[in-house]
Length: 111
Length: 114
Image (cartoon, rainbow over all chains, first blue to last red; front, side, top):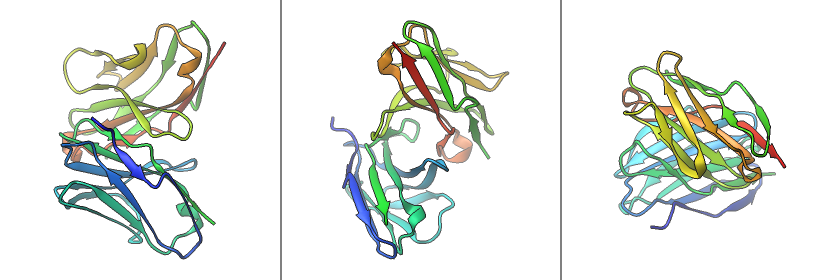
């Protein structure tokens, strides 16, 4: 099976812009979660989706949003980008909520 | 609330020597414990997990971890480290009582010198 894929792998944006990141889970996995990784804050949970419904949400401002499609693919959106949003964004998928498999991440740089 | 502590930011060992990366956790209910490894500019790679059963868990690439309920620890070990084991290691915990949401430690950078 193919692993979790994330696109794009690298992204450069300027402050105030918005960005959409995409995640395709492993075939058969219906749960998708998103994490932000920064040197200062480490790995922080953003949100989790199952069958197109958000089940959990971390402590991030409303500028961060996401959705899941009927084929389990997920997108996350960050509006009004700030310098502090520069991070590696990781997506993970699971078939049973117990084992999570991570994608390679999208490296977002905000200038 | 649940949390993970990795008390060492860095671990340095010589190739061929034993490697230990420490992890302690706090969680309500039964813990599900994980170790992941991250190489530069890559995502997280699953190493091993403990959910139930034997306290000694064997995983990928010769790694193992021991679940100790009384000490709330889940230390990662490898009997003989390789230079290629140099990477960033994360311990994580989840629980049915927290909707299986993963909480990660801050990570430990392992450097194995030749």
